[in-house]
Image (tube, rainbow, N blue to C red; front, top):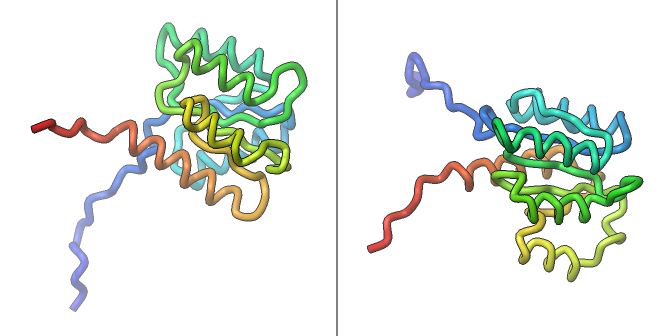
Length: 156
């Protein structure tokens, strides 16, 4: 006999209501990340920007209506790096949940620099665009969404 309920209650993905902005000057990467979040991560269609300055414009406009929850940005972009974008996001309080930085070359940023950015709340993580990138990306975005949606704990 099958122990599963006849009509299981669907479980909504933590990303189902999460507003995400993907920033990368490489159109193929930008679209690939957005597609992965939408189709595999069950996220609403992420919005996209091809530069840090375009991202800041979108983030400022969104702050007046419905702010973005998560920004996923490339580390190396012309004009404004992902770290500079993440710092501007933090200074302007432009994102609700956090910023993730992705990079083709993780050696471009030291473990100490990465930890400092995380400790200062500038980024939630720095992800290598290699290996199981999609799995890491989905794990990190889901964790950010879950932590932001946790009910407050009562203090005795």
